[in-house]
Length: 136
Image (cartoon, rainbow, N blue to C red; front, side):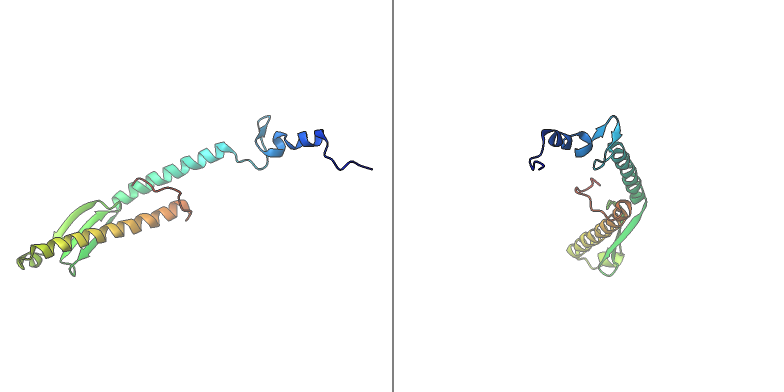
């Protein structure tokens, strides 16, 4: 009748590198990622993100407020490039209203830049969310 207790040799065999992953004699084993491939993938992603940042800097978005009396143009990263104020807004003499419209137009342009960034990031990552925010 066979013993139901595992033998020492069968327990030892279950701990061999080929059983738990890793590499044996330079050959990758089942269950373990190839770290050189992961590194290469990371470098490719870094290159794509760098290109995306450059492309965003070349794109522009426009925000407006007050029915178009104030328009703000920003690059795809949200940096304000220009502010245009309709002379009619200034002639009313209400400086606070013009200031509020400028702030609203800047916020609108930055929101549009954020949307552009999110769309471009989805293209680069294939929709996979990143576990950390990017610094741009």
